[in-house]
Length: 103
Image (tube, rainbow, N blue to C red; front, side, top):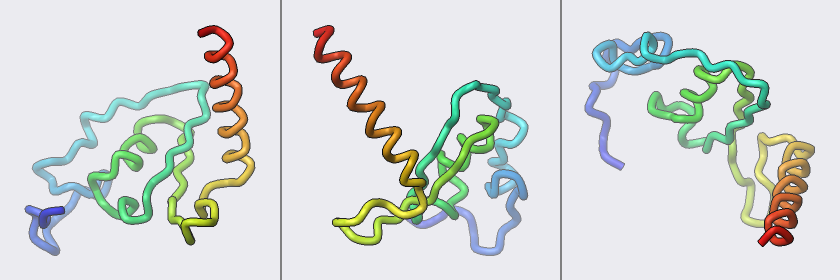
C-alpha cells in the first residue's frame, strides 16, 4: 500500500482521526437499529483512520467491534467471542438448509 499523503505529526480531527480538510464528522448520520452489529476489524486496520470497521461503529448505535488476529492457521481467531462464532455458524447452516430446500 502507498504512503500516507499526510505528513507525520500533522493535525488530525479528534473524532475521525483524518486531517481537518478531510474530516467526515459532520457528514456521519447516526443509525438506530434493532440488530446487534458485530464488526471484525483486522489488527492492521484497527489504528488506521480509514478503517471502515471503525466508521461503522461510529455510525451504528450499539455496534461491538472485535479486533481479529489469527494466532495460527489452525486456531480460531482471537478477540471474537466463541459463543458468537457458534451462533453465526448455526445461522449460516440454517440459511444454507433453508435455501437448499427451497431451491
